[in-house]
Length: 155
Image (cartoon, rainbow, N blue to C red; front, top):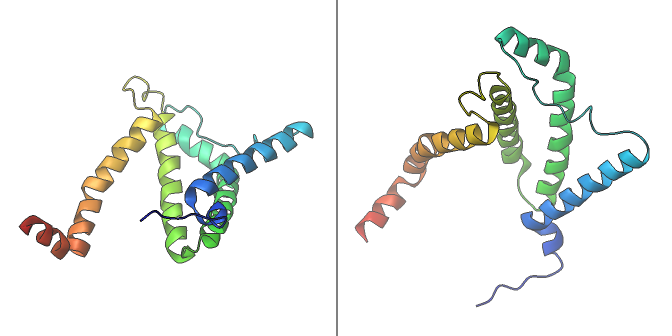
Protein backbone atom coordinates (compact mmCIF):
# COMPACT_ATOMS: atom_id res chain seq x y z
CA UNK A 1 0.00 0.00 0.00
CA UNK A 2 1.43 3.36 -1.03
CA UNK A 3 1.71 6.09 1.54
CA UNK A 4 -0.08 9.22 0.46
CA UNK A 5 1.30 12.62 1.15
CA UNK A 6 -0.55 15.88 1.24
CA UNK A 7 -0.04 19.56 1.76
CA UNK A 8 0.45 19.02 5.49
CA UNK A 9 3.76 17.33 4.69
CA UNK A 10 5.12 20.80 3.94
CA UNK A 11 5.16 21.58 7.67
CA UNK A 12 4.94 18.13 9.25
CA UNK A 13 8.07 16.48 7.80
CA UNK A 14 11.70 17.03 8.78
CA UNK A 15 12.83 17.04 5.16
CA UNK A 16 10.63 20.00 4.36
CA UNK A 17 11.74 21.81 7.52
CA UNK A 18 15.35 21.46 6.35
CA UNK A 19 14.34 23.20 3.13
CA UNK A 20 12.36 25.95 4.91
CA UNK A 21 15.15 26.61 7.40
CA UNK A 22 17.77 26.68 4.66
CA UNK A 23 15.71 29.13 2.62
CA UNK A 24 15.10 31.21 5.75
CA UNK A 25 18.83 31.43 6.46
CA UNK A 26 19.50 32.49 2.88
CA UNK A 27 16.78 35.17 3.06
CA UNK A 28 18.06 36.52 6.39
CA UNK A 29 21.65 36.57 5.10
CA UNK A 30 20.50 38.34 1.93
CA UNK A 31 18.52 40.90 3.93
CA UNK A 32 21.55 41.54 6.14
CA UNK A 33 23.78 41.91 3.09
CA UNK A 34 21.31 44.24 1.38
CA UNK A 35 21.16 46.44 4.48
CA UNK A 36 24.96 46.53 4.84
CA UNK A 37 25.19 44.28 7.90
CA UNK A 38 26.04 40.62 8.38
CA UNK A 39 25.57 37.60 10.61
CA UNK A 40 29.26 37.62 11.54
CA UNK A 41 28.62 38.41 15.22
CA UNK A 42 26.41 35.35 15.56
CA UNK A 43 28.65 33.03 13.52
CA UNK A 44 31.18 32.37 16.26
CA UNK A 45 33.63 29.46 16.24
CA UNK A 46 36.72 28.81 18.35
CA UNK A 47 39.85 30.56 17.11
CA UNK A 48 43.14 28.70 16.70
CA UNK A 49 44.67 28.03 20.11
CA UNK A 50 47.87 26.49 21.43
CA UNK A 51 47.25 26.36 25.18
CA UNK A 52 44.19 25.79 27.35
CA UNK A 53 44.64 29.38 28.58
CA UNK A 54 44.20 30.61 24.98
CA UNK A 55 41.01 28.57 24.63
CA UNK A 56 39.75 29.77 28.01
CA UNK A 57 40.41 33.37 27.04
CA UNK A 58 38.46 32.87 23.83
CA UNK A 59 35.43 31.45 25.63
CA UNK A 60 35.63 34.12 28.34
CA UNK A 61 35.55 36.82 25.68
CA UNK A 62 32.92 35.30 23.37
CA UNK A 63 30.50 33.47 25.68
CA UNK A 64 27.65 35.93 24.97
CA UNK A 65 27.95 35.14 21.26
CA UNK A 66 27.82 31.39 21.93
CA UNK A 67 24.82 31.89 24.19
CA UNK A 68 23.05 33.99 21.54
CA UNK A 69 23.81 31.36 18.90
CA UNK A 70 22.46 28.61 21.15
CA UNK A 71 19.31 30.61 21.94
CA UNK A 72 18.66 31.41 18.28
CA UNK A 73 19.02 27.82 17.09
CA UNK A 74 17.08 26.47 20.04
CA UNK A 75 14.19 28.83 19.29
CA UNK A 76 14.18 28.06 15.56
CA UNK A 77 14.45 24.30 15.98
CA UNK A 78 12.04 24.18 18.91
CA UNK A 79 9.44 25.97 16.79
CA UNK A 80 9.84 23.46 13.99
CA UNK A 81 9.79 20.51 16.41
CA UNK A 82 6.62 21.82 18.05
CA UNK A 83 4.89 22.33 14.69
CA UNK A 84 5.83 18.78 13.70
CA UNK A 85 4.08 17.60 16.87
CA UNK A 86 7.12 16.31 18.75
CA UNK A 87 7.59 16.85 22.50
CA UNK A 88 9.89 19.75 23.40
CA UNK A 89 10.68 18.13 26.75
CA UNK A 90 12.76 15.52 24.92
CA UNK A 91 14.17 17.84 22.27
CA UNK A 92 15.61 20.65 24.43
CA UNK A 93 18.07 18.56 26.51
CA UNK A 94 19.15 16.59 23.44
CA UNK A 95 19.77 19.79 21.50
CA UNK A 96 21.74 21.26 24.41
CA UNK A 97 23.92 18.14 24.52
CA UNK A 98 24.53 18.23 20.75
CA UNK A 99 25.31 21.95 20.81
CA UNK A 100 27.89 21.47 23.58
CA UNK A 101 29.39 18.53 21.68
CA UNK A 102 29.61 20.65 18.52
CA UNK A 103 31.36 23.49 20.37
CA UNK A 104 33.79 21.04 21.99
CA UNK A 105 34.50 19.31 18.66
CA UNK A 106 35.15 22.64 16.96
CA UNK A 107 37.38 23.71 19.85
CA UNK A 108 39.49 20.55 19.58
CA UNK A 109 39.60 21.01 15.79
CA UNK A 110 40.92 24.57 16.27
CA UNK A 111 43.86 23.32 18.38
CA UNK A 112 47.13 24.12 16.60
CA UNK A 113 48.30 20.50 16.99
CA UNK A 114 45.03 19.09 15.61
CA UNK A 115 46.10 19.57 12.00
CA UNK A 116 49.28 17.58 12.64
CA UNK A 117 47.10 14.66 13.78
CA UNK A 118 44.41 15.29 11.09
CA UNK A 119 41.86 15.88 13.84
CA UNK A 120 39.46 18.00 11.86
CA UNK A 121 35.97 18.63 13.29
CA UNK A 122 34.09 16.31 10.85
CA UNK A 123 36.39 13.42 11.73
CA UNK A 124 36.09 14.17 15.46
CA UNK A 125 32.29 14.28 15.16
CA UNK A 126 32.30 10.93 13.36
CA UNK A 127 34.54 9.37 16.00
CA UNK A 128 32.39 10.74 18.84
CA UNK A 129 29.23 9.48 17.14
CA UNK A 130 30.73 6.03 16.70
CA UNK A 131 31.90 6.00 20.31
CA UNK A 132 28.48 7.00 21.64
CA UNK A 133 26.49 4.65 19.42
CA UNK A 134 28.74 1.66 20.11
CA UNK A 135 28.97 2.17 23.87
CA UNK A 136 26.16 4.20 25.40
CA UNK A 137 23.79 3.46 22.50
CA UNK A 138 24.46 -0.26 22.70
CA UNK A 139 24.05 -0.34 26.48
CA UNK A 140 20.76 1.58 26.28
CA UNK A 141 19.47 -0.68 23.50
CA UNK A 142 20.23 -3.76 25.60
CA UNK A 143 18.59 -2.28 28.70
CA UNK A 144 15.53 -0.93 26.90
CA UNK A 145 15.12 -3.46 24.09
CA UNK A 146 17.00 -6.42 25.57
CA UNK A 147 14.07 -8.81 25.37
CA UNK A 148 13.33 -7.71 21.79
CA UNK A 149 16.90 -8.44 20.66
CA UNK A 150 16.81 -11.83 22.39
CA UNK A 151 13.66 -12.73 20.44
CA UNK A 152 15.30 -11.70 17.18
CA UNK A 153 18.21 -14.06 17.87
CA UNK A 154 15.78 -16.99 18.26
CA UNK A 155 14.25 -16.53 14.79
